[in-house]
Length: 189
Image (cartoon, rainbow, N blue to C red; front, side):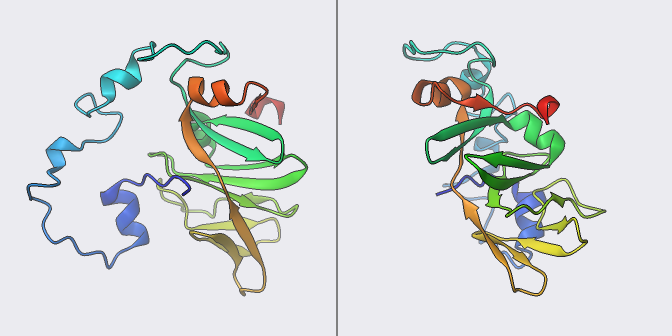
């Protein structure tokens, strides 16, 4: 299951305006118990902000902080990590992994990030995009594409570019399993 961590009031409602909530105040989900991950009162805030892990990790890499958030993408035998902070800032990244063209679409305010095939297309945000994960992108010819759960779909529906598997990790965890990983740098592009 690919990651999708939208903010309810900003991103979820923008994409699903007909959503109904039975009751935001109940014994199972009290908003005060589940603040945003980067808020100091969130359950795992302390764990995310201290540099140590709760268990030994021998295979480490110093290019990023131990608990820096990364989007990990594996295609064939190629592995690449993109920092979540970079993706939030850039919002759309056109890249190539293992000889395949990919486009990464990110929210500016959460870890809602998706990876799609792009078949040599170059994508960008349409003008007036909001800070949440964009529901649409524009290619170099000006055609609008819908960024859905399973694919990018051209405006006329004639072309579909499938969504690729990815996930959000702490840097130490991604590197421990993929020590040969590349690390994306916008400066190299």
